[in-house]
Length: 329
View 1 (cartoon, rainbow, N blue to C red):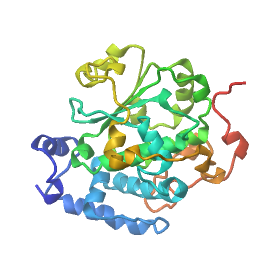
View 2 (cartoon, one colour):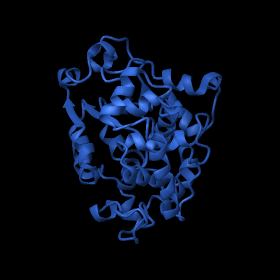
View 3 (tube, helix red, strand yellow):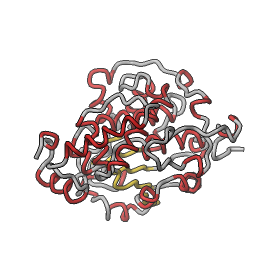
């Protein structure tokens, strides 16, 4: 075992070896092979290239050097192309703070049977008068950045549960193709986390409609890990035991305190008042404007080809791309 594996339990070390093909004898060589590919992408600013950082990308891609490098490149390119999103990316940012305090995301104290951290989102908590969908995405990315420092979670990964109870048609109508694509790129394509399952519960018909729209742009692996439970919580409990779930999800734990994770990140700043207007933080139309077509979503297969996440030529008007997927009219 090298010092890079020092934070892993014996069980997780074995899991890393068997499932991820992690070999302590070649670990430094694996990392260096990924680092050596950086020269092929001079268009990207790789702001961090230390061993521990590159290792999390290797683990996320089961030590496939090419795929690990591609994920590393996409991680930094996503940040370059969405600069406004990552300005002031900290828990005390007003929009992020509001989202965190409403449980975006919630983080359960207990791990599942596979050692995965369980994130919960209670969708109806989204107060659109106080913060934006992009603020929620920023809060989730910030939270993942904090949690992925734990080597155990780099190996074991995460599970996401989204409870759509009382999420209104009006709330859903605020979601645009650009917003959803931004989230897909940020979470599926550009972050070194292993998601073992994404569970929808109590989803209304219009959430099924939204999922139908984004489904073609999800990787096969992602699609296979999305479970639509509806109001059948028993099917959820077959995968995640109720002993570790809050009562809102039919579990045996007390109701989830939405401020739990926010207090962890904010500490004493949790109770400080913050003035914030959602309109004060928006991505420019240029930053959000992207074509929602399978071809535009397709990733480059070449290590040396720049622009893995480059935006295509504008194929739609700004107005069309910013239209809601669901209309109240």
